[in-house]
Image (cartoon, rainbow, N blue to C red; front, side):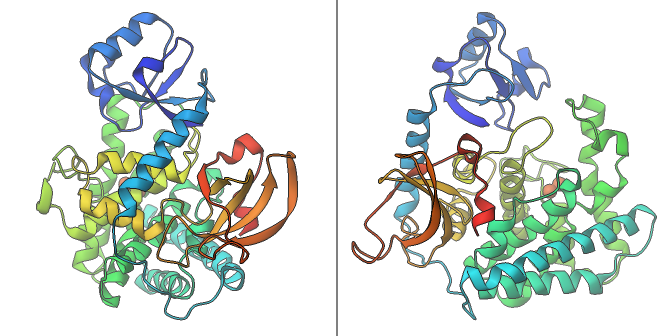
Length: 406
Ligand SMILES: [Fe+2]
Ligand SMILES: [Fe+2]
């Protein structure tokens, strides 16, 4: 598990994971992506650098007492997001998650298959079949219009060695959901979804041995990986059917508001709006997925990290809207209720994102898996909603798989 802790709580034996928070840019650390804290010297170097918080990987090093740290994250994030008035857009043809989940599973697997085919074709210099991509994007949009959470909730269930296909599918789902929230017209939502499905197509041109590496990349390898954006632009331009704004969005997905991104170090409004949207959904999906060099980060914690990068890497306004669009506790997250029960977020039906519908699956008082039942926190006491969320939970800690309960 990846956890954020205050520098003052660092201990030798912990393992710090670089999650793009910028601190490893300090000259002392060179271009390291992660570091084992094996001496007090490292801790004092970090403190001297003025770094107040770091991310540790508890699978590779020591843990801390997590309870207090976690609560702090949730409370602060909730407080900051609560004050926004915009409601989540209603589904156009609303169905419950129970009704949509079967469709969503099918759409997910079909989309992954299409992305697989499209990327394989790109690898051997073939054409991108725009018709197939359209089909996948239309399916995702129709599912999101029926039920906003089903595909989002399924997003993290994936085969580990097919990262880029699942990632492209998931970034498309998140971008479409976010685009709807931003009030984009249907055509723009579609072009955004298309851009997202194809955003990493340039990865097909990166040598296998670099992609398969499980140890940290060296400078040259990292430079090569960064080229996927340029390779992608060329591939997309070669195909006459991909809308210009989709190509631009894909080209901009690693640019950062403060000019620290690549390939061109664009700043602020130089980055297209669709590119800015996708930069956020891309990072969110990457963080919440398990990778060979780190465990997966829980959605609420990932949102908190992205929230902190608002104003530097991303537009703060867009970040806040993104969190509103999927919820502080996105569908599929595991949360603990005040009553001691643990449940999975099923949907957000009310305007209050802190009062979602939850499938209760575990009782921490009795340490017992319960027969799943549903509570709607937006309904008052007596109608299923007398409880409240006190924080998110790590599924691994309880050996639970939230996605299985959607
Ligand atoms: Fe990328
Ligand atoms: Fe990506």
